[in-house]
Length: 361
Ligand code: NAI
Ligand code: MG
Image (cartoon, rainbow, N blue to C red; front, side):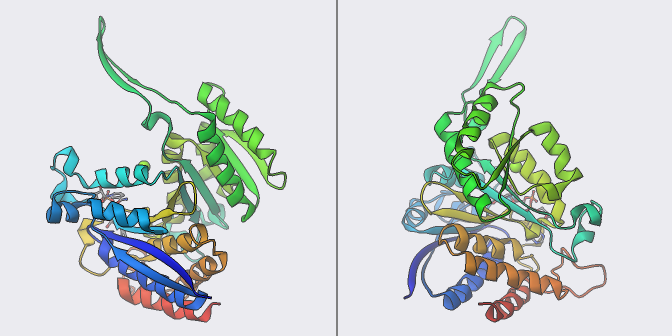
């Protein structure tokens, strides 16, 4: 029986439209092979939405995202809108969209493709076999706590507040354990429990949730040590789960393990199955419109969409396997090509992925 799914597609700015086109192409091909019928609705977002309707996140866009099972986003922003007032800034749209959809878990896998060890600044033998997933809490912690400025006798004083409630910790930990079950069954919960009260609560809740997942191993690690271990022994990690700010920093650190930012997908998930899928990189205005951007991050984001929003591990793995095959054959976009090597254009690379995907079932 054909599975009906509704996907909101938000190409955005810069290279967004070019890479999203490849993502949609791959999504449709996988849909055909794995029995889906898609309703695809396109929406405006970011600077291009500001130009058209003076609003970075138009109501119609929010509406189609609400109605959709999943959202595929390109990227927003660029120099053309950098001087806009706050309410007309492209990034505003992203923060608001994540919040409106209640997306509290941000997932960033970092996996090394064989043959790309040279793109990283770390030694190949350290990177061999890297395959980790950073799960970052996205709607709590110090970024959302009370902020204050005040004058004191000794000058100006600024305060940020780091707040977590047990239910916020519990729901993200539970997600991390569930994802670990489909991987190598190891969760590293990262905190600063030697200093922070919110981290002590985090650790307590982690222990409690772990009781429900006896098949998954839980370790605790202090964030400063984790920052070292990610580059020292990255293959030791399977799933890393942590609070908002630690996750912001550690996920960028984990990202550089794999070389080009053009390879890295992400997913943001809330309660239920709806998710927002987007490459980790931005709108790359310097190469926009040239058809040279790497579409891999977006294509792998589509794989995550099948995995997390449609519960279809088989389709997700087929897309990932197709990308791996194409890279193993030596196909490279400009960002990964060695000097003097012929690079594929964005859509040529997408076509190669489609051809490989047809061989997967
Ligand atoms: P960026 O990720 O757009 O670009 C950084 C570097 O990586 C540039 O050299 C770019 O050419 C290259 N690059 C990025 N994606 C690539 C791809 N798929 N293929 C090949 N090369 C790629 O970050 P940058 O330059 O800091 O920001 C540019 C704009 O994007 C800014 O307006 C920023 O605010 C916005 N941005 C948006 C994000 C989003 O929509 N989620 C995330 C990060 C930045
Ligand atoms: Mg960041």
